[in-house]
Image (cartoon, rainbow, N blue to C red; front, side):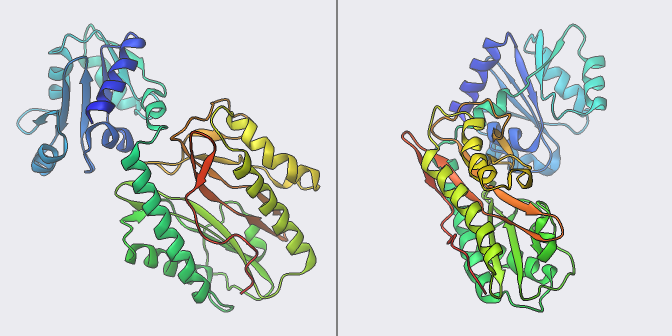
Length: 356
């Protein structure tokens, strides 16, 4: 936490800010270590405050090392925030402009006389993009749980089950293997519904002759995994095999190219060019990938608009897809660590066309 606080303070100074006010779940946990659901962080040039209520008194004191823990009870939350900010002679306060509610902003503005409120923009998110060794280990563990769950699902999936039954088994298995939560609502989409990139499970029955897309992830020690595999229930025909293999070729080619110095749009183009050349460019309508960490969708973005340059320590997804309305679709997704000279794939599940 000392290193993270130091990085934040460097960026605050560079942006002529005297302090930062944080309360989004991911930024709060990243900078303070607090895993509870309610807390507010004020970081100044030489002090760090963590403000919460009685329910989290012991937890905050145990987890928030290097912070002065303030418990508001007889006083209001805003009065404690005000005391921490004004007691440190803050003139310019940085806020999470992409997260803060209008009511919180107005409350701060009306209570902090003489304090200019300015946007932090992506200050914390930029720091969070580069994962340290502990973060990488946690994400690797979350990815390994997802891999084990997928292995189990290959024996479980059969015609006649509903998408919902498959999703429940998948989610139960990840938690049984040590996950504390899901990264997001599991996507289980079969048949024509596999053309829906975010086709959350329904009570549809899975039949022979259908693609079945599973996009899922879990949380381990606060960190997320994200993986997609598309399998075929029954025997795939030549068109289905062709579509699958185009997506697979694009996904594998990206893994050959990812390295520091490339921009997000450079990486996206590798996959997009392959899919477009095969005549399915209009059927790949989303970005290639995104960062993963405390949140399942973080910076950097791998897309035609991704201007950010990749650096070692970033963890991103590689997830090309082809989606054909009223027919079906295929997506294959790996979790990838950018290394000093290339990348390392954290998702280990097989990617060849699996026919069940």
